[in-house]
Image (cartoon, rainbow, N blue to C red; front, side):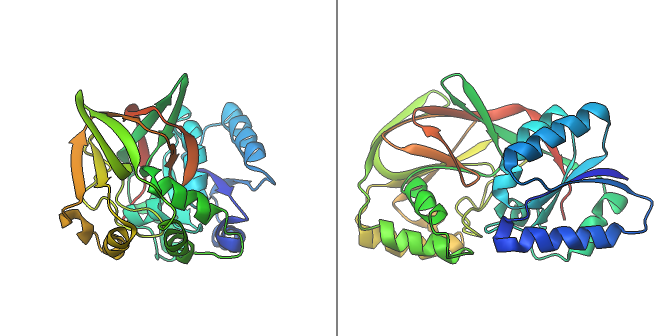
Length: 293
C-alpha cells in the first residue's frame, strides 16, 4: 500500500498528534510506503499534498483529524481521485460517525484498506457568486451558524459540550430570519430559526440533525425550523441528539436535488464558515471514495 497520511497535530487538543504517532508505530517495519504530511499550517499541508501527488500516485489518503480537515482536503481528494480513510481525531468527528468509524480502534481502521474496498459517496457543492465549495456532511444557516461561530470561539472548552454551551448562550439573543428557500423550483418564503441542508446525518459531535440523510442517494435533505420562542427552541434542542425532533410540529423536512437559500445570515458547512447568503447547494458531479464500516 502506498498512502499519503495527512495529520493535523492540533486536532482534538493534541489528539491528532498522538494518533499520528500510533499510525507511525503501526506501520513501522512494514513494507507499506507511507508519506507523512504534518505541516505547521493548513496551507502548507495542502501545498505538500499537491507536490506529492504531482510526482507520484497513491492508493489512498489517510486523514488524521476532524471534520474541518476533511472539508479542506476535499478539492485535493476529488482532483487526484484519492480514496479516503478517516482516522477521527477532531472535536466533533461527525463524518467519521456517519461512516461508522468513530470509536473504533486505530489499528482496526488502518487495516480496512487491506480487507475491503472503498465505496463512492455524494459530495455536495455550494455555489456563492463565482466560488464553488464542496462539502460532505451538513450545511447550516441561521441559528445553527450563530451557534457554530460561538462554539468555534471557545478555545478553552473542548468536545461537543461547547456546542451545548453555545446553544444556551445564543438562544436568548437570536432573532428569526426572513428566508426565501427554493427547492427544485418550489419557493418557500417564511421567517425561520434555521435552515440546514444535509448530506450526512449529524453535526456538533453526534447531534442527529438529519437522521434520514444518506450519503449515497444523490438527494439533499433540507430541514427548516419555524419561528419559535427561545423556550420552545430549547425544548426541541435535546431531541436532536436522538433524532426525535423530526416529529416536532415546528420542524419540517424536504428533499431535493438543488436548493437556493436567501436570507440575512451566513452559511457554515462541515463546521467551517463558507459565505454569506445567498447560496445554492446541489449534489456535485463527482463522487468521493471512502472506507467505511
